[in-house]
Image 1 (cartoon, rainbow, N blue to C red):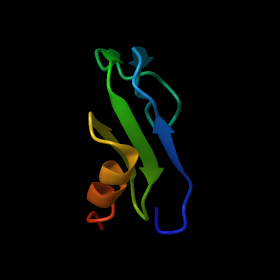
Image 2 (cartoon, one colour; image 1 turned 180 degrees about the vertical axis):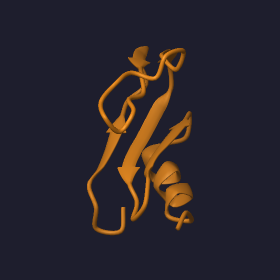
Image 3 (cartoon, helix red, strand yellow; image 1 turned 120 degrees about the vertical axis):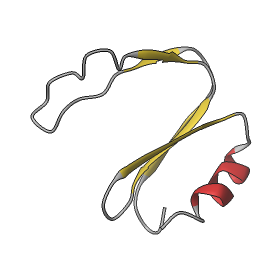
Length: 66
């Protein structure tokens, strides 16, 4: 995305959890995802788009974010 690496995770059930800046897991934030996900880093934040869209469609949506 805008010259930065992005990852396309193809739909199958997987578990996601979130970490604080110092590496500790955010309690209560763990969940199972069962759809595609596009993950990338913007200038100020990480983005994750969970969708049933195709990769091309997800990239089109993601390109509208600043």
